[in-house]
Amino acid sequence: MPTFIEKQPAKATKDDAPFFPDEPQEPTVVTAIPGPKSKEAVRRLDKVFDASAAAFSVDYHKSHGNYIVDVDGNVLLDVYAQIASIPVGYNNPTLLKAATSPAMASSLINRPALGNFPQKDWATILETGLLKVAPKGMNQVFTALSGADANELAYKAAFIWKRQQERGRRDADFTQEELESTMLNQEPGSPNLSIMSFKAAFHGRLFGSLSTTRSKPIHKLDIPAFDWPQCPFPAIKYPPEDHIEENQREEKRCLEEAEHIIKNYPSKVAAVIVEPIQSEGGDNHASPAFFQGLREITRRHQVLLIVDEVQTGIGATGRFWAHEHWNLSDPPDMVTFSKKAQTGGFYFGNPEIRPNKPYRLFNTWMGDPVRAILFGAIVDEIERLDLVRNTAEVGDYLYGEIEKLGDKYPGKFTNLRGKGQGTFIAFDNPRRDEFLALAKTHGINLGGCGASAVRLRPMLIFQKHHADILLGVLDKIAREL
Image 1 (tube, rainbow, N blue to C red):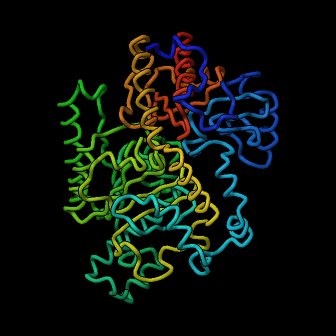
Image 2 (spheres, one colour):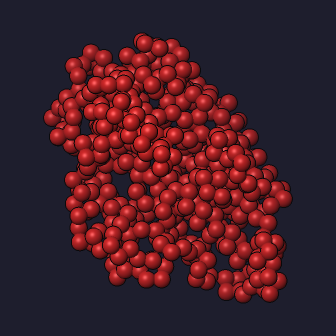
Image 3 (cartoon, rainbow, N blue to C red):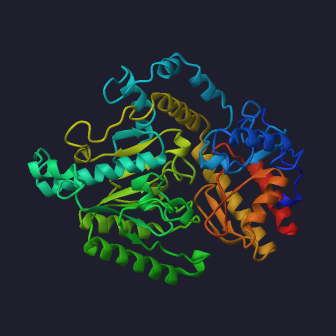
């Protein structure tokens, strides 16, 4: 069977019928990226909005399927999906239909303050969308506005739960001392509790979430932070099958440190938050056994386990939720989500996690029905096209072919990771930034993470013929670097 290098430019076959028949057949690059029109658009925008991180200016009317089009007419195969956040393609017809529905129009012009004045069909919207794909053991959801917001809400829920446990019963009332001291940001009303996260973790950039984010200094500099504990995350050696005993020892060391922190940290740990794959921090993996051990430790010490599926969720790893790969007999206490969901929030099943009084987890909007309606359409599209299975199969193919590239070009595709994790694949390259820049010149939009990682975050509609285009470009870049 010929490899991708021997094939003609990618065309969909009968066995690989395109999900978007009208999308471009291949990338087209007509200017430098960013081009002159894009530079001018960004310059204009920067006068009124911080555009310092803008890669290029996008024409979303012309972007279609897996392809993002800039204002200069460059057509790029988007293997980064914005920031791992576009699930089923640009200008997806199913989503466009949902966007023009009467339910969407009503929610847009009559945006409800969901905590006080929920719309009459809010339960139905949740049941047919967000709760339809809820993780195992979870039948309730708090909706939010972003991934960072989702984690903030989960942290607050964990602290409230912890104090309820310490008071001995759910309906226990607050003391006068608690009521008065909390207005001064002092104990006992403002308790000395903490959330434990892991080295190189990313959980958002709001105040609580930023205190658990540990991926890059620039995210945290000049911002006051809570004195919360950091645990080492396993530094796995690759390929894992060649380092089984070393990796087991490393994971055991990290679990022992996690338990030590939980038992001894001055600020009592209310919850542990962990990503199934540390994404922003470098695409760092650990085995199912590590996460099983972490669940056992948190349960043993009556600490909640929050799984941050903001980037890994919604089918990207070949399972709808990445933590499904762990085969936990005891599910997490909360699972946070956003990005590909196009909304945010956290799932839970234990009714004691819901605060015992109103207004404790609350804001004006408490999410957005517009985004929840859109997520329902996303779920329908995922089911209609069997996109989780597609992602698993294409990911297996893509991983195997990049493995061959690693053999062909030693040192160019090192520490390849993501085997069996759908298209959630990454590798290291010592000249990563040049690698990403070259990819754009060949019409591929890629992303980086950590110190030297190239990460692939294609959409769920990314198919084998798209993978072949990507692989051909990766081969060219390896020869050029």
